[in-house]
Image 1 (cartoon, rainbow, N blue to C red):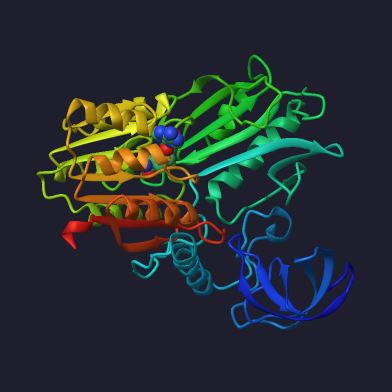
Image 2: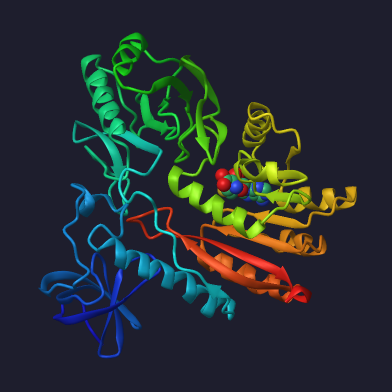
Length: 452
Ligand code: SAH
Protein backbone atom coordinates (compact mmCIF):
# COMPACT_ATOMS: atom_id res chain seq x y z
CA UNK A 1 0.00 0.00 0.00
CA UNK A 2 1.35 3.43 -0.87
CA UNK A 3 0.81 6.45 1.35
CA UNK A 4 0.44 10.18 0.80
CA UNK A 5 3.81 11.90 0.21
CA UNK A 6 5.57 8.62 -0.67
CA UNK A 7 8.07 9.02 -3.48
CA UNK A 8 9.24 6.22 -5.74
CA UNK A 9 10.33 5.37 -9.25
CA UNK A 10 7.38 4.60 -11.57
CA UNK A 11 7.11 3.43 -15.16
CA UNK A 12 4.09 4.70 -17.08
CA UNK A 13 2.54 1.81 -18.99
CA UNK A 14 -0.94 2.95 -20.06
CA UNK A 15 -3.52 5.72 -20.27
CA UNK A 16 -6.90 6.31 -18.66
CA UNK A 17 -9.89 7.16 -20.84
CA UNK A 18 -9.45 10.81 -19.73
CA UNK A 19 -5.93 10.79 -21.13
CA UNK A 20 -3.87 10.63 -17.92
CA UNK A 21 -0.98 8.16 -17.54
CA UNK A 22 -1.08 5.01 -15.39
CA UNK A 23 1.67 2.90 -13.85
CA UNK A 24 1.70 0.01 -11.39
CA UNK A 25 3.51 0.02 -8.06
CA UNK A 26 3.23 -2.92 -5.66
CA UNK A 27 0.33 -4.19 -7.77
CA UNK A 28 -1.55 -0.92 -7.28
CA UNK A 29 -2.63 1.44 -10.09
CA UNK A 30 -1.03 4.88 -9.82
CA UNK A 31 -2.54 7.68 -11.90
CA UNK A 32 -0.26 10.53 -12.94
CA UNK A 33 -1.43 13.37 -15.21
CA UNK A 34 0.72 14.75 -18.02
CA UNK A 35 2.74 11.59 -18.42
CA UNK A 36 3.32 9.43 -21.50
CA UNK A 37 3.67 5.68 -21.93
CA UNK A 38 7.37 4.94 -21.63
CA UNK A 39 8.09 7.71 -19.10
CA UNK A 40 10.17 6.72 -16.10
CA UNK A 41 9.40 9.23 -13.36
CA UNK A 42 10.00 9.95 -9.73
CA UNK A 43 6.39 9.92 -8.54
CA UNK A 44 5.13 11.88 -5.54
CA UNK A 45 1.85 10.54 -4.12
CA UNK A 46 -0.74 13.26 -3.50
CA UNK A 47 -3.72 11.04 -2.72
CA UNK A 48 -3.75 7.40 -1.57
CA UNK A 49 -6.87 5.21 -1.62
CA UNK A 50 -7.29 1.50 -0.94
CA UNK A 51 -7.32 0.34 -4.53
CA UNK A 52 -5.45 3.14 -6.31
CA UNK A 53 -3.38 6.28 -5.77
CA UNK A 54 -2.87 9.60 -7.51
CA UNK A 55 0.63 10.92 -8.00
CA UNK A 56 2.37 13.84 -9.63
CA UNK A 57 5.68 14.08 -11.40
CA UNK A 58 8.44 15.00 -8.92
CA UNK A 59 11.01 14.49 -11.66
CA UNK A 60 11.14 12.91 -15.08
CA UNK A 61 13.98 10.38 -14.82
CA UNK A 62 13.79 9.09 -18.40
CA UNK A 63 11.37 10.73 -20.81
CA UNK A 64 9.22 8.60 -23.10
CA UNK A 65 10.09 8.77 -26.80
CA UNK A 66 6.54 10.04 -27.34
CA UNK A 67 7.11 13.13 -25.24
CA UNK A 68 7.17 16.55 -26.92
CA UNK A 69 7.52 20.07 -25.52
CA UNK A 70 3.96 21.49 -25.10
CA UNK A 71 3.48 24.29 -27.62
CA UNK A 72 0.70 26.14 -25.81
CA UNK A 73 1.70 28.68 -23.18
CA UNK A 74 -1.21 27.75 -20.91
CA UNK A 75 -1.00 23.93 -21.21
CA UNK A 76 -0.15 23.42 -17.52
CA UNK A 77 -2.80 25.71 -16.04
CA UNK A 78 -5.80 25.43 -18.34
CA UNK A 79 -6.58 21.72 -18.33
CA UNK A 80 -8.38 21.78 -21.68
CA UNK A 81 -5.70 19.72 -23.43
CA UNK A 82 -4.76 16.27 -22.14
CA UNK A 83 -2.17 15.52 -24.82
CA UNK A 84 -0.16 18.71 -25.31
CA UNK A 85 2.93 16.83 -24.10
CA UNK A 86 2.82 13.79 -26.41
CA UNK A 87 3.32 13.38 -30.15
CA UNK A 88 0.24 13.41 -32.36
CA UNK A 89 1.14 9.93 -33.63
CA UNK A 90 0.98 8.53 -30.11
CA UNK A 91 -2.25 10.41 -29.43
CA UNK A 92 -3.84 8.82 -32.51
CA UNK A 93 -2.61 5.38 -31.46
CA UNK A 94 -4.14 5.61 -28.02
CA UNK A 95 -7.41 7.11 -29.28
CA UNK A 96 -7.85 4.23 -31.73
CA UNK A 97 -7.04 1.86 -28.88
CA UNK A 98 -9.63 3.58 -26.67
CA UNK A 99 -12.36 2.86 -29.24
CA UNK A 100 -11.27 -0.78 -29.64
CA UNK A 101 -11.09 -1.26 -25.88
CA UNK A 102 -14.59 0.14 -25.41
CA UNK A 103 -15.98 -2.34 -27.95
CA UNK A 104 -14.15 -5.24 -26.32
CA UNK A 105 -14.87 -4.37 -22.67
CA UNK A 106 -18.30 -2.75 -22.82
CA UNK A 107 -19.71 -4.19 -26.02
CA UNK A 108 -18.04 -7.60 -25.92
CA UNK A 109 -17.88 -7.41 -29.72
CA UNK A 110 -15.09 -6.94 -32.23
CA UNK A 111 -16.17 -5.46 -35.54
CA UNK A 112 -13.51 -4.63 -38.10
CA UNK A 113 -11.57 -1.58 -36.97
CA UNK A 114 -10.39 0.78 -39.68
CA UNK A 115 -7.41 3.08 -39.06
CA UNK A 116 -8.23 6.28 -37.21
CA UNK A 117 -8.78 9.32 -39.45
CA UNK A 118 -6.51 12.14 -38.21
CA UNK A 119 -7.73 15.72 -37.98
CA UNK A 120 -6.47 17.82 -40.91
CA UNK A 121 -5.20 20.36 -38.34
CA UNK A 122 -3.93 19.65 -34.85
CA UNK A 123 -3.82 23.32 -33.84
CA UNK A 124 -6.25 26.19 -34.45
CA UNK A 125 -9.00 23.82 -35.57
CA UNK A 126 -11.78 24.95 -33.21
CA UNK A 127 -14.44 27.25 -34.62
CA UNK A 128 -16.06 28.12 -31.30
CA UNK A 129 -14.89 29.56 -27.97
CA UNK A 130 -16.73 30.57 -24.82
CA UNK A 131 -14.50 32.65 -22.59
CA UNK A 132 -15.72 33.54 -19.10
CA UNK A 133 -14.87 37.15 -18.16
CA UNK A 134 -14.03 37.81 -14.50
CA UNK A 135 -11.83 39.80 -12.17
CA UNK A 136 -9.41 37.73 -10.10
CA UNK A 137 -7.78 39.85 -7.36
CA UNK A 138 -8.83 42.94 -9.27
CA UNK A 139 -7.21 41.86 -12.53
CA UNK A 140 -9.35 41.36 -15.62
CA UNK A 141 -9.22 37.76 -16.87
CA UNK A 142 -10.72 36.51 -20.14
CA UNK A 143 -10.00 32.88 -20.82
CA UNK A 144 -10.69 29.51 -19.31
CA UNK A 145 -11.53 27.99 -15.98
CA UNK A 146 -8.34 26.71 -14.39
CA UNK A 147 -8.14 22.94 -13.91
CA UNK A 148 -10.89 21.68 -11.56
CA UNK A 149 -11.89 25.18 -10.42
CA UNK A 150 -14.06 28.21 -11.15
CA UNK A 151 -11.08 30.56 -11.18
CA UNK A 152 -10.71 32.17 -14.57
CA UNK A 153 -7.24 32.42 -16.08
CA UNK A 154 -6.19 34.46 -19.07
CA UNK A 155 -5.31 32.54 -22.15
CA UNK A 156 -3.57 34.97 -24.42
CA UNK A 157 -3.38 32.62 -27.37
CA UNK A 158 -5.00 29.19 -27.01
CA UNK A 159 -3.46 27.07 -29.74
CA UNK A 160 -6.73 25.26 -30.46
CA UNK A 161 -8.48 28.50 -31.43
CA UNK A 162 -8.06 30.58 -34.58
CA UNK A 163 -5.70 33.54 -34.29
CA UNK A 164 -8.56 36.02 -34.74
CA UNK A 165 -10.07 34.86 -31.43
CA UNK A 166 -6.96 36.09 -29.60
CA UNK A 167 -7.08 39.41 -31.45
CA UNK A 168 -10.76 39.84 -30.55
CA UNK A 169 -10.10 38.93 -26.90
CA UNK A 170 -7.43 41.62 -26.66
CA UNK A 171 -9.67 44.25 -28.33
CA UNK A 172 -12.44 43.28 -25.94
CA UNK A 173 -10.12 43.55 -22.94
CA UNK A 174 -9.04 47.02 -24.03
CA UNK A 175 -12.66 48.10 -24.57
CA UNK A 176 -13.62 46.93 -21.05
CA UNK A 177 -10.64 48.73 -19.49
CA UNK A 178 -10.99 51.94 -21.53
CA UNK A 179 -14.69 52.27 -20.75
CA UNK A 180 -14.60 51.06 -17.15
CA UNK A 181 -17.16 48.35 -17.88
CA UNK A 182 -17.97 46.11 -14.93
CA UNK A 183 -17.56 42.34 -15.15
CA UNK A 184 -19.65 39.64 -13.56
CA UNK A 185 -18.90 38.16 -10.16
CA UNK A 186 -20.32 34.69 -9.51
CA UNK A 187 -20.29 35.24 -5.72
CA UNK A 188 -22.47 38.34 -5.66
CA UNK A 189 -24.24 37.89 -8.99
CA UNK A 190 -23.38 41.47 -10.03
CA UNK A 191 -21.33 43.08 -12.77
CA UNK A 192 -22.16 43.33 -16.47
CA UNK A 193 -19.95 41.20 -18.74
CA UNK A 194 -20.25 37.42 -18.23
CA UNK A 195 -18.89 35.70 -21.33
CA UNK A 196 -17.28 36.42 -24.65
CA UNK A 197 -18.57 33.80 -27.07
CA UNK A 198 -16.97 33.54 -30.52
CA UNK A 199 -17.72 31.56 -33.64
CA UNK A 200 -15.91 31.40 -36.95
CA UNK A 201 -17.18 29.84 -40.16
CA UNK A 202 -14.03 28.28 -41.59
CA UNK A 203 -15.57 27.77 -45.04
CA UNK A 204 -16.24 31.51 -45.53
CA UNK A 205 -14.08 33.21 -42.87
CA UNK A 206 -17.12 34.89 -41.27
CA UNK A 207 -16.89 35.64 -37.54
CA UNK A 208 -19.66 36.12 -34.98
CA UNK A 209 -19.00 37.83 -31.64
CA UNK A 210 -21.56 37.30 -28.90
CA UNK A 211 -21.29 39.17 -25.59
CA UNK A 212 -23.26 37.65 -22.73
CA UNK A 213 -24.32 40.30 -20.22
CA UNK A 214 -26.02 40.50 -16.85
CA UNK A 215 -27.95 43.68 -17.69
CA UNK A 216 -30.33 45.29 -20.17
CA UNK A 217 -27.96 46.70 -22.79
CA UNK A 218 -24.34 46.99 -23.82
CA UNK A 219 -22.92 50.48 -23.10
CA UNK A 220 -20.32 52.00 -25.49
CA UNK A 221 -21.38 49.46 -28.12
CA UNK A 222 -20.33 51.76 -30.99
CA UNK A 223 -16.70 51.84 -29.92
CA UNK A 224 -16.65 48.03 -29.58
CA UNK A 225 -18.14 47.66 -33.07
CA UNK A 226 -15.61 50.12 -34.48
CA UNK A 227 -12.66 48.18 -33.11
CA UNK A 228 -14.13 44.80 -34.17
CA UNK A 229 -14.51 46.09 -37.73
CA UNK A 230 -10.72 45.95 -37.90
CA UNK A 231 -10.81 42.13 -37.56
CA UNK A 232 -11.02 40.43 -40.93
CA UNK A 233 -14.20 38.36 -41.27
CA UNK A 234 -16.12 40.15 -38.47
CA UNK A 235 -19.78 39.91 -39.52
CA UNK A 236 -22.03 40.01 -36.53
CA UNK A 237 -22.21 41.25 -32.92
CA UNK A 238 -24.88 39.68 -30.74
CA UNK A 239 -25.80 40.75 -27.23
CA UNK A 240 -27.24 37.93 -25.16
CA UNK A 241 -28.90 38.71 -21.85
CA UNK A 242 -28.40 36.24 -19.01
CA UNK A 243 -29.45 37.57 -15.59
CA UNK A 244 -29.78 34.18 -13.91
CA UNK A 245 -27.42 32.92 -11.21
CA UNK A 246 -26.42 29.88 -13.22
CA UNK A 247 -23.49 28.11 -14.89
CA UNK A 248 -25.41 28.00 -18.16
CA UNK A 249 -23.62 30.41 -20.51
CA UNK A 250 -26.44 31.79 -22.66
CA UNK A 251 -29.64 33.49 -21.49
CA UNK A 252 -32.94 33.48 -23.30
CA UNK A 253 -32.91 36.89 -25.02
CA UNK A 254 -30.53 37.94 -27.76
CA UNK A 255 -30.25 40.81 -30.22
CA UNK A 256 -27.93 41.36 -33.15
CA UNK A 257 -26.60 44.92 -32.71
CA UNK A 258 -24.34 44.67 -35.73
CA UNK A 259 -24.98 42.46 -38.78
CA UNK A 260 -27.38 39.53 -38.71
CA UNK A 261 -28.02 36.96 -36.01
CA UNK A 262 -26.20 34.26 -37.96
CA UNK A 263 -23.08 33.64 -39.97
CA UNK A 264 -22.85 31.32 -42.96
CA UNK A 265 -20.43 28.44 -43.35
CA UNK A 266 -19.86 25.93 -46.14
CA UNK A 267 -19.62 22.31 -45.01
CA UNK A 268 -19.35 19.39 -47.46
CA UNK A 269 -20.48 21.81 -50.18
CA UNK A 270 -23.63 22.80 -48.25
CA UNK A 271 -24.22 26.38 -47.14
CA UNK A 272 -25.02 26.31 -43.44
CA UNK A 273 -26.49 29.15 -41.37
CA UNK A 274 -25.12 29.06 -37.85
CA UNK A 275 -26.64 31.01 -34.99
CA UNK A 276 -25.07 31.28 -31.56
CA UNK A 277 -27.76 28.85 -30.38
CA UNK A 278 -27.31 25.98 -32.84
CA UNK A 279 -25.18 22.91 -32.26
CA UNK A 280 -22.39 22.92 -34.81
CA UNK A 281 -19.38 20.62 -35.11
CA UNK A 282 -16.39 22.51 -33.68
CA UNK A 283 -13.77 21.13 -36.09
CA UNK A 284 -14.90 22.13 -39.59
CA UNK A 285 -12.36 20.16 -41.63
CA UNK A 286 -12.61 17.17 -39.27
CA UNK A 287 -16.43 17.27 -39.59
CA UNK A 288 -16.14 17.01 -43.37
CA UNK A 289 -14.09 13.82 -43.00
CA UNK A 290 -16.55 12.48 -40.42
CA UNK A 291 -19.55 13.21 -42.65
CA UNK A 292 -17.76 11.69 -45.66
CA UNK A 293 -17.24 8.50 -43.67
CA UNK A 294 -20.89 8.50 -42.55
CA UNK A 295 -21.93 9.01 -46.20
CA UNK A 296 -19.66 6.15 -47.32
CA UNK A 297 -21.28 3.85 -44.71
CA UNK A 298 -24.78 5.02 -45.68
CA UNK A 299 -23.79 4.57 -49.38
CA UNK A 300 -27.02 6.01 -50.79
CA UNK A 301 -27.81 5.17 -54.41
CA UNK A 302 -30.55 7.73 -54.99
CA UNK A 303 -33.37 5.34 -54.05
CA UNK A 304 -33.19 5.35 -50.26
CA UNK A 305 -35.32 7.15 -47.74
CA UNK A 306 -32.91 8.19 -45.02
CA UNK A 307 -33.77 8.97 -41.42
CA UNK A 308 -31.29 11.31 -39.67
CA UNK A 309 -31.91 11.10 -35.92
CA UNK A 310 -30.34 13.72 -33.58
CA UNK A 311 -29.84 15.82 -36.72
CA UNK A 312 -28.91 19.21 -35.16
CA UNK A 313 -29.03 21.83 -37.94
CA UNK A 314 -29.55 19.02 -40.46
CA UNK A 315 -25.99 19.01 -41.77
CA UNK A 316 -25.39 15.24 -42.16
CA UNK A 317 -28.71 14.58 -43.92
CA UNK A 318 -28.44 17.66 -46.15
CA UNK A 319 -24.93 16.73 -47.24
CA UNK A 320 -26.24 13.44 -48.73
CA UNK A 321 -29.75 14.56 -49.77
CA UNK A 322 -28.73 14.71 -53.45
CA UNK A 323 -27.93 10.99 -53.33
CA UNK A 324 -31.13 9.97 -51.52
CA UNK A 325 -34.81 9.71 -52.39
CA UNK A 326 -35.65 11.61 -49.21
CA UNK A 327 -34.14 12.71 -45.90
CA UNK A 328 -36.08 13.13 -42.67
CA UNK A 329 -34.30 14.73 -39.72
CA UNK A 330 -35.40 14.57 -36.08
CA UNK A 331 -33.95 16.86 -33.40
CA UNK A 332 -35.10 18.08 -29.99
CA UNK A 333 -33.91 21.74 -30.07
CA UNK A 334 -36.42 24.02 -31.89
CA UNK A 335 -33.79 26.59 -33.04
CA UNK A 336 -31.70 23.79 -34.57
CA UNK A 337 -34.75 22.55 -36.51
CA UNK A 338 -35.46 26.11 -37.69
CA UNK A 339 -31.84 26.27 -38.91
CA UNK A 340 -32.19 22.87 -40.60
CA UNK A 341 -35.30 23.99 -42.50
CA UNK A 342 -33.59 27.25 -43.52
CA UNK A 343 -30.46 25.35 -44.55
CA UNK A 344 -32.50 23.08 -46.82
CA UNK A 345 -34.01 26.18 -48.48
CA UNK A 346 -30.67 27.94 -48.75
CA UNK A 347 -29.34 24.97 -50.73
CA UNK A 348 -32.50 24.40 -52.80
CA UNK A 349 -32.93 20.96 -51.27
CA UNK A 350 -36.54 19.92 -51.67
CA UNK A 351 -36.43 16.25 -50.58
CA UNK A 352 -35.61 16.93 -46.92
CA UNK A 353 -37.95 17.58 -44.02
CA UNK A 354 -37.24 18.18 -40.36
CA UNK A 355 -39.21 17.37 -37.25
CA UNK A 356 -38.71 18.86 -33.81
CA UNK A 357 -39.11 16.00 -31.32
CA UNK A 358 -37.28 13.62 -29.05
CA UNK A 359 -35.56 11.03 -31.26
CA UNK A 360 -37.66 8.14 -29.98
CA UNK A 361 -40.99 9.97 -30.06
CA UNK A 362 -40.29 11.50 -33.49
CA UNK A 363 -39.15 8.19 -34.96
CA UNK A 364 -42.15 6.40 -33.46
CA UNK A 365 -44.55 8.93 -34.96
CA UNK A 366 -42.86 8.50 -38.35
CA UNK A 367 -43.28 4.73 -38.08
CA UNK A 368 -46.99 5.20 -37.40
CA UNK A 369 -47.05 7.38 -40.50
CA UNK A 370 -45.73 4.38 -42.42
CA UNK A 371 -42.33 5.61 -43.63
CA UNK A 372 -39.82 2.82 -44.26
CA UNK A 373 -36.26 4.15 -44.26
CA UNK A 374 -33.68 1.79 -45.72
CA UNK A 375 -30.93 3.66 -43.90
CA UNK A 376 -30.97 5.28 -40.46
CA UNK A 377 -28.23 7.61 -39.27
CA UNK A 378 -28.00 8.39 -35.55
CA UNK A 379 -25.68 11.01 -34.02
CA UNK A 380 -26.66 11.28 -30.35
CA UNK A 381 -24.96 13.37 -27.63
CA UNK A 382 -22.41 11.71 -25.33
CA UNK A 383 -24.97 9.77 -23.32
CA UNK A 384 -25.83 7.78 -26.45
CA UNK A 385 -29.26 6.66 -27.69
CA UNK A 386 -32.10 5.87 -25.33
CA UNK A 387 -33.22 2.24 -25.20
CA UNK A 388 -36.58 3.33 -26.67
CA UNK A 389 -34.87 5.09 -29.55
CA UNK A 390 -32.76 2.00 -30.33
CA UNK A 391 -35.84 -0.25 -30.24
CA UNK A 392 -37.71 2.05 -32.61
CA UNK A 393 -34.70 2.17 -34.93
CA UNK A 394 -34.61 -1.64 -35.07
CA UNK A 395 -38.42 -1.86 -35.53
CA UNK A 396 -38.03 0.13 -38.75
CA UNK A 397 -35.98 -2.84 -39.90
CA UNK A 398 -33.57 -0.73 -42.02
CA UNK A 399 -30.86 -2.40 -44.13
CA UNK A 400 -28.20 -0.21 -42.57
CA UNK A 401 -27.68 1.83 -39.46
CA UNK A 402 -24.87 4.38 -39.35
CA UNK A 403 -24.02 5.40 -35.81
CA UNK A 404 -21.94 8.58 -35.40
CA UNK A 405 -20.72 8.88 -31.83
CA UNK A 406 -18.71 11.29 -29.71
CA UNK A 407 -18.30 8.77 -26.88
CA UNK A 408 -16.84 5.31 -27.57
CA UNK A 409 -18.24 3.91 -24.29
CA UNK A 410 -21.89 4.64 -25.12
CA UNK A 411 -21.31 3.66 -28.77
CA UNK A 412 -20.05 0.24 -27.62
CA UNK A 413 -22.96 -0.13 -25.17
CA UNK A 414 -25.51 0.71 -27.89
CA UNK A 415 -23.72 -1.53 -30.42
CA UNK A 416 -24.21 -4.46 -28.09
CA UNK A 417 -27.92 -3.62 -27.74
CA UNK A 418 -28.33 -3.30 -31.51
CA UNK A 419 -26.66 -6.71 -31.92
CA UNK A 420 -29.26 -8.14 -29.56
CA UNK A 421 -31.93 -6.53 -31.74
CA UNK A 422 -30.81 -8.29 -34.93
CA UNK A 423 -28.05 -6.02 -36.25
CA UNK A 424 -24.36 -6.66 -36.67
CA UNK A 425 -21.67 -4.05 -36.06
CA UNK A 426 -19.66 -4.54 -39.25
CA UNK A 427 -17.05 -1.84 -39.22
CA UNK A 428 -15.87 1.04 -37.05
CA UNK A 429 -13.77 4.05 -38.02
CA UNK A 430 -12.49 6.34 -35.25
CA UNK A 431 -12.19 9.98 -36.32
CA UNK A 432 -10.06 12.47 -34.41
CA UNK A 433 -12.17 15.59 -34.25
CA UNK A 434 -10.56 16.96 -31.09
CA UNK A 435 -6.75 16.81 -31.31
CA UNK A 436 -4.84 17.38 -28.05
CA UNK A 437 -7.95 16.64 -25.95
CA UNK A 438 -8.99 13.21 -24.73
CA UNK A 439 -12.18 13.09 -26.85
CA UNK A 440 -12.54 10.91 -29.89
CA UNK A 441 -15.37 10.42 -32.34
CA UNK A 442 -16.33 7.12 -34.00
CA UNK A 443 -18.57 6.01 -36.88
CA UNK A 444 -19.96 2.48 -36.87
CA UNK A 445 -21.81 0.67 -39.66
CA UNK A 446 -24.47 -1.93 -38.78
CA UNK A 447 -26.10 -4.36 -41.20
CA UNK A 448 -29.16 -6.51 -40.71
CA UNK A 449 -27.99 -9.97 -39.59
CA UNK A 450 -29.59 -11.67 -42.57
CA UNK A 451 -27.40 -9.71 -44.97
CA UNK A 452 -24.20 -11.22 -43.65
N1 SAH B 1 -25.93 15.50 -36.33
C1 SAH B 1 -25.70 16.85 -35.88
C2 SAH B 1 -25.84 17.03 -34.37
C3 SAH B 1 -25.15 16.05 -33.50
S1 SAH B 1 -25.03 16.51 -31.80
C4 SAH B 1 -24.37 17.38 -36.39
O1 SAH B 1 -23.53 16.64 -36.89
O2 SAH B 1 -24.15 18.59 -36.29
C5 SAH B 1 -26.39 15.72 -31.06
C6 SAH B 1 -27.70 16.43 -31.29
O3 SAH B 1 -28.70 15.67 -30.59
C7 SAH B 1 -27.78 17.84 -30.72
O4 SAH B 1 -28.20 18.71 -31.75
C8 SAH B 1 -28.84 17.74 -29.61
O5 SAH B 1 -29.62 18.90 -29.49
C9 SAH B 1 -29.68 16.57 -30.07
N2 SAH B 1 -30.43 15.84 -29.04
C10 SAH B 1 -30.10 15.63 -27.74
N3 SAH B 1 -31.00 14.85 -27.14
C11 SAH B 1 -31.94 14.53 -28.06
C12 SAH B 1 -33.13 13.74 -28.04
N4 SAH B 1 -33.53 13.12 -26.94
N5 SAH B 1 -33.84 13.65 -29.18
C13 SAH B 1 -33.44 14.27 -30.32
N6 SAH B 1 -32.32 15.04 -30.40
C14 SAH B 1 -31.58 15.17 -29.29
